[in-house]
Each structure stands twice: as structure tokens, then as C-alpha cells.
Image (tube, rainbow, N blue to C red; front, side, top):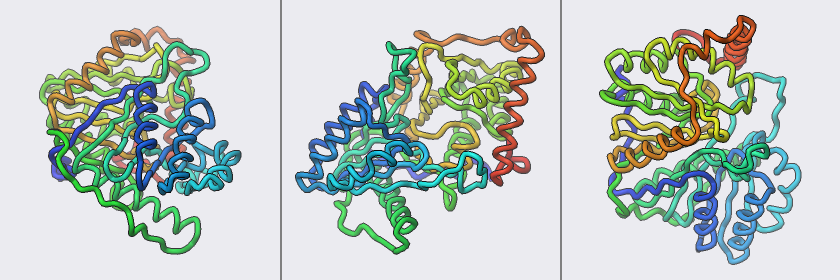
Length: 394
């Protein structure tokens, strides 16, 4: 079956506002919470009790105090310190807070241990939503205080709110059931009216472990297979499987300009080295690779032919594509795609370095070996978890 046959459901008449870094996202989210009248839903992988977290939590507490139903879902691993220190405070403030998979053992690689809530979603009164890749935490690294992590979130209005609220509601009910061991349904939520708010055709694409296991990956593959001119991908953690790599190579071989912007600052050395092990093959097939050095690159976005674009939480690695709960927005709109492309290209011009084959050939044999060893270790971790086997593995 062609990947294009697995295309997600698009709705017309949406408004998408591109928010770049926390400097634009955090004030927009806070303002939406401050004006909420009935319901606030927030999902995040990381919530910290820092300058950003305290500001947003204060807005949530004020909303709860005026009678708004505030529901906060955090990941039990990504937000474990916040859960340990502040869970009761949130409950005492009238905020309904749940934890997705509270227990985590770093030595246990059973597949359910690696299934995390990596989505970053918010829905306010069924009227406005936020979907993207920015966590609720101060995004200026301590050793690079002048530049934030480079990432994106979308502020959304329009018919797409129906799908976003539906998935947030569904996951909340699942976590209630898993935590409290009884069925629970949210029946009194204000339903999004679905009225047009703009002109963008867009779809919500999610990844879970039941019905939507490969939806995000297949959406990427379908768009890459149709590309005719240009593919631009910016991704924090890039370790695609063979299908994905073959699709990119095939695009480059038919004359498509393929450009990938990746992490240059080392945040997690094992993943960073594993990604670099793929550079010789990709560069050798004509794919341009840039590493972002100005700060940490946390973006999970792509633009294809200035017609197709995606912004979301999903990295192109086995942990996002095979294990975690993720959410991306896909837009079919030339104006939005051009805006996103220009933003990524500006980031490349301001803080990225182009790589050539010399990046690899100048490395010592031990340095190359370490990168292949890192790649093998990631493969082993995915294999132990029960994924990555067969032709669709790493």
C-alpha cells in the first residue's frame, strides 16, 4: 500500500499562528489561560517549577479559583521532580492533575517502560488550542544564556479544535482509568463549534500504541514520496529507520533538494553520536546536513515543496516513532509552509554549520568507532523493548 493512501483527515478553514521559542509561546498560553471561562486542558512532557512553570501555574491556579475546570496531565518521567515536589500543591489549588506512567526504572527496557507522554497540547474552552514541541520550562540553557532552545508551537483556531480536544479528552479518560481503576467519561465539556477561523487546510496526526502506531511516520513518508523540489527537515533527535532513510535518499536521487537541520550542541551524547553515524551515508547520497550550534535545537518541523508542513512533538527517531505518545499538526497551505521554511532557514543562517564528508573522514578511527557503537546501543535498546525488528527497524 502506498503511504499516500494513509493520508490523515484534513479540515478546512483553520487559523495557524506560528510561535517561535518560549518567548512567543509562554505569553500566548498564559493569556489564553487568563481568559478561560470553563475548561483548560494541558498536556506536557516536562513541567518545571522554574520562572516559566511558576508563571503558568499561577495562571492555572487563578483560573481554578474563578471556577474554571483546569486539567493538567504530565509525564511521570519527564516531570518526575515536579510530581514529587508539587503534586499535592496543585491538587490543593483545585487543579485536576494526573501523571502519565508515574513509575520509571532506568534499567528496565521493557516496552511499556519506554512509552512516554511526549505530546505538548493545550485546549482552552474548546476555542483555542496549542500544539507543538515546547515544554513548560525555562528554555534558556544555563551555559548558553543568551539564546533559547529553538523550537515551535502553533496557536490554533477553527474546525481542527474538534480533533485536538477529542484526543486530549480521550487520553485524560484513559489515564483516569489506569490510575483510579474505574471508567470515567468527560460528558460536560463545551464542544468546539468548528466554525471557520482562517483559510488553512490542516490535520492533527497522533502516534499511540493502538490505532495510530505509524500515522506520523506514514504522513512524513507520503509527503516525501510526493516531493518534487525541496525537503527541509529540522529535528532535535534524528535516527530514522531504513524506510525513512530510503525515502530521503530516493528523493535526493530524483533531484529533490534534501536539507536536514540537526542538533549541534551535545545534550545526550549517546543519541548525538548515534545520529552522526548516519552522516556519511546521507551526505554521500547528496543530502545536505547542517548542525545547529547557536543553542539547543529542539524543533520537530518539516516543509516540503512549500505546500506541506508539519509542526509537533515527534522526533524522527525510534523513541518518538515507535514508543511515545506524540502529536503533530500537518498543514497544506503555501503561505504557512513558506513562513515556516523562512523561519528555519533564518535559524540556519544565524547559527548552523554545513557539514561535508570531511566531517567524517577527518575523525579518528576510535571516534568513528564510538559513533557506530552508540548507534548499535540505541538499536539494542529498541530491540529489547520489542520494536525495531525486521525490515522496518533501524
